[in-house]
Image (tube, rainbow, N blue to C red):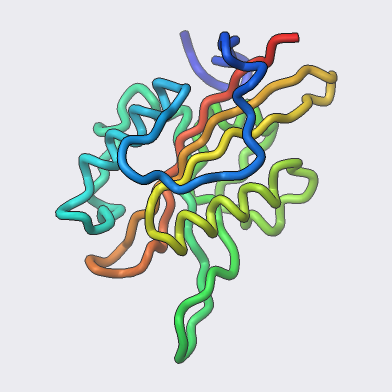
Length: 184
Protein backbone atom coordinates (compact mmCIF):
# COMPACT_ATOMS: atom_id res chain seq x y z
CA UNK A 1 0.00 0.00 0.00
CA UNK A 2 1.29 3.46 -0.85
CA UNK A 3 1.83 5.76 2.08
CA UNK A 4 1.05 9.43 1.68
CA UNK A 5 -1.52 12.10 2.32
CA UNK A 6 -4.32 10.00 0.81
CA UNK A 7 -3.32 6.64 2.30
CA UNK A 8 -3.18 6.84 6.07
CA UNK A 9 -1.47 4.14 8.06
CA UNK A 10 -3.45 5.05 11.18
CA UNK A 11 -4.54 1.93 13.04
CA UNK A 12 -6.19 1.08 16.30
CA UNK A 13 -4.19 -0.22 19.21
CA UNK A 14 -5.70 -2.30 22.02
CA UNK A 15 -4.09 -0.17 24.74
CA UNK A 16 -5.07 3.15 23.15
CA UNK A 17 -7.33 4.13 26.05
CA UNK A 18 -4.47 4.39 28.48
CA UNK A 19 -1.42 5.04 26.32
CA UNK A 20 -1.24 8.85 26.24
CA UNK A 21 1.25 10.41 28.64
CA UNK A 22 1.51 14.02 29.71
CA UNK A 23 5.27 14.48 29.54
CA UNK A 24 8.20 13.10 27.63
CA UNK A 25 10.86 11.03 29.29
CA UNK A 26 14.47 10.25 28.54
CA UNK A 27 15.37 6.78 27.35
CA UNK A 28 17.85 4.95 29.55
CA UNK A 29 18.61 1.49 28.19
CA UNK A 30 16.04 -0.27 26.01
CA UNK A 31 12.88 1.80 25.71
CA UNK A 32 9.42 0.37 26.24
CA UNK A 33 7.70 1.30 23.00
CA UNK A 34 4.21 0.51 21.76
CA UNK A 35 4.95 1.03 18.07
CA UNK A 36 7.14 -1.51 16.27
CA UNK A 37 7.89 1.24 13.74
CA UNK A 38 9.22 3.54 16.45
CA UNK A 39 11.19 0.61 17.92
CA UNK A 40 12.83 -0.03 14.51
CA UNK A 41 13.87 3.62 14.34
CA UNK A 42 15.45 3.38 17.78
CA UNK A 43 17.28 0.18 16.80
CA UNK A 44 18.73 1.87 13.70
CA UNK A 45 19.88 4.86 15.77
CA UNK A 46 21.40 2.61 18.46
CA UNK A 47 23.28 0.61 15.81
CA UNK A 48 24.82 3.85 14.49
CA UNK A 49 26.12 4.85 17.95
CA UNK A 50 29.82 4.19 18.41
CA UNK A 51 31.19 3.44 21.88
CA UNK A 52 28.62 5.58 23.68
CA UNK A 53 29.13 8.62 21.44
CA UNK A 54 26.34 10.25 19.48
CA UNK A 55 26.05 8.92 15.95
CA UNK A 56 27.20 11.16 13.15
CA UNK A 57 24.19 12.29 11.12
CA UNK A 58 25.99 11.28 7.90
CA UNK A 59 26.61 7.76 9.23
CA UNK A 60 22.93 6.94 9.57
CA UNK A 61 21.98 5.90 6.05
CA UNK A 62 18.49 5.69 4.59
CA UNK A 63 18.99 1.95 4.13
CA UNK A 64 19.05 1.56 7.92
CA UNK A 65 15.59 3.13 8.01
CA UNK A 66 14.18 1.20 5.04
CA UNK A 67 10.51 0.47 5.48
CA UNK A 68 9.93 3.22 8.04
CA UNK A 69 10.97 6.34 6.10
CA UNK A 70 7.37 7.66 5.88
CA UNK A 71 7.39 7.86 9.71
CA UNK A 72 10.78 9.58 10.00
CA UNK A 73 11.53 13.25 10.49
CA UNK A 74 14.85 15.07 10.84
CA UNK A 75 15.22 18.22 12.90
CA UNK A 76 18.10 20.71 13.02
CA UNK A 77 18.81 22.06 16.51
CA UNK A 78 19.36 25.80 16.17
CA UNK A 79 21.56 27.02 19.02
CA UNK A 80 22.88 30.33 20.18
CA UNK A 81 26.61 30.90 19.78
CA UNK A 82 28.55 32.63 22.50
CA UNK A 83 31.31 32.38 25.07
CA UNK A 84 29.21 30.26 27.42
CA UNK A 85 27.41 26.97 26.89
CA UNK A 86 25.25 26.70 23.80
CA UNK A 87 21.55 27.18 24.38
CA UNK A 88 18.82 25.76 22.17
CA UNK A 89 17.07 28.63 20.41
CA UNK A 90 14.74 26.82 18.00
CA UNK A 91 14.31 23.78 15.77
CA UNK A 92 13.98 23.50 11.98
CA UNK A 93 12.45 20.53 10.19
CA UNK A 94 15.02 19.27 7.68
CA UNK A 95 12.81 16.43 6.41
CA UNK A 96 9.30 15.23 7.27
CA UNK A 97 8.11 11.77 6.16
CA UNK A 98 4.88 11.35 4.23
CA UNK A 99 2.98 9.62 7.05
CA UNK A 100 3.88 12.43 9.46
CA UNK A 101 2.79 14.99 6.84
CA UNK A 102 -0.54 13.20 6.34
CA UNK A 103 -1.33 13.51 10.07
CA UNK A 104 -0.24 17.11 10.48
CA UNK A 105 -2.03 18.16 7.27
CA UNK A 106 1.02 20.22 6.26
CA UNK A 107 4.54 19.59 5.05
CA UNK A 108 6.67 21.51 7.53
CA UNK A 109 9.96 20.65 5.82
CA UNK A 110 12.24 23.70 6.03
CA UNK A 111 10.09 25.44 8.65
CA UNK A 112 11.06 26.38 12.19
CA UNK A 113 8.99 24.86 14.95
CA UNK A 114 8.47 28.33 16.47
CA UNK A 115 6.87 29.50 13.19
CA UNK A 116 4.29 26.73 12.96
CA UNK A 117 1.13 28.29 14.29
CA UNK A 118 -1.88 26.20 15.14
CA UNK A 119 0.00 22.96 15.76
CA UNK A 120 -1.63 21.79 18.98
CA UNK A 121 1.38 19.86 20.22
CA UNK A 122 3.93 22.60 19.45
CA UNK A 123 4.79 23.41 23.10
CA UNK A 124 5.07 19.70 23.92
CA UNK A 125 7.39 19.12 20.96
CA UNK A 126 9.60 22.09 21.91
CA UNK A 127 9.99 20.59 25.41
CA UNK A 128 10.68 17.11 23.96
CA UNK A 129 13.24 18.32 21.40
CA UNK A 130 14.97 20.47 24.03
CA UNK A 131 15.07 17.55 26.46
CA UNK A 132 16.65 15.19 23.89
CA UNK A 133 19.18 17.71 22.59
CA UNK A 134 20.28 19.03 26.01
CA UNK A 135 20.63 15.56 27.58
CA UNK A 136 22.08 14.07 24.34
CA UNK A 137 20.00 10.90 24.79
CA UNK A 138 16.73 9.79 23.16
CA UNK A 139 13.41 11.00 24.52
CA UNK A 140 9.99 9.36 24.10
CA UNK A 141 6.56 10.98 24.11
CA UNK A 142 3.01 9.81 23.60
CA UNK A 143 0.70 12.66 22.67
CA UNK A 144 -3.10 12.52 22.56
CA UNK A 145 -5.05 14.93 20.35
CA UNK A 146 -8.46 15.57 18.77
CA UNK A 147 -8.86 15.92 15.02
CA UNK A 148 -10.96 18.70 13.52
CA UNK A 149 -13.77 16.16 13.12
CA UNK A 150 -13.62 15.35 16.84
CA UNK A 151 -11.94 11.94 16.58
CA UNK A 152 -9.51 11.07 19.36
CA UNK A 153 -6.05 10.02 18.24
CA UNK A 154 -2.59 9.74 19.72
CA UNK A 155 0.92 9.19 18.50
CA UNK A 156 4.12 7.77 19.88
CA UNK A 157 7.35 9.47 18.93
CA UNK A 158 10.97 9.01 19.80
CA UNK A 159 13.50 11.78 19.25
CA UNK A 160 17.14 10.70 19.07
CA UNK A 161 20.11 13.09 19.11
CA UNK A 162 22.86 13.02 16.50
CA UNK A 163 25.79 15.27 15.70
CA UNK A 164 27.11 16.66 12.43
CA UNK A 165 30.73 16.62 13.62
CA UNK A 166 32.50 13.91 15.60
CA UNK A 167 32.50 14.77 19.30
CA UNK A 168 30.19 17.72 18.68
CA UNK A 169 26.96 18.65 20.41
CA UNK A 170 23.55 17.19 19.61
CA UNK A 171 22.77 19.47 16.68
CA UNK A 172 20.41 17.19 14.76
CA UNK A 173 17.50 15.03 15.91
CA UNK A 174 16.16 11.89 14.28
CA UNK A 175 12.48 11.41 15.04
CA UNK A 176 10.15 8.51 14.31
CA UNK A 177 6.41 8.76 14.95
CA UNK A 178 3.43 6.48 14.47
CA UNK A 179 -0.18 7.65 14.81
CA UNK A 180 -3.05 5.59 16.25
CA UNK A 181 -6.82 5.83 16.61
CA UNK A 182 -8.09 5.90 20.16
CA UNK A 183 -11.00 3.62 20.95
CA UNK A 184 -14.17 5.20 22.19
